Image (cartoon, rainbow, N blue to C red; front, side, top):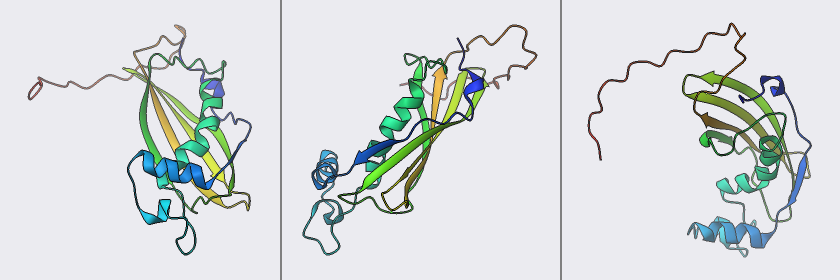
Length: 165
């Protein structure tokens, strides 16, 4: 079953996450980042979250969208396509982050479908801390309504591979 295009524009309820010093330090250490800005709590001005920590504060919001039964997301065929992230304000220990998700688009491709989910997160002061466009790809052509007059895109000729490993 294809993704449900009627869900484009759908917004999901906000999720709230409490950010702790411990969580920020553990996240940085998990990927071997010893930057004092991320781990040294005695640093003047305190520490800030590593940029990719933003994924953790928007994850539950993203999952609300992905698990929406109306969308018909086939998790077994899902591939993380791409991600565009903005970080307008740093995330700090003690922040209470509120994150939301919205389905921006669903597009049919000859090799599958893409869906773009916009994730927004702000702190307790209302300052935006992250904006993400998360794009998933659902592998494999999925049948749209046979009565649809929407033409299927034609995949370009690729030619022989240059080399194989």
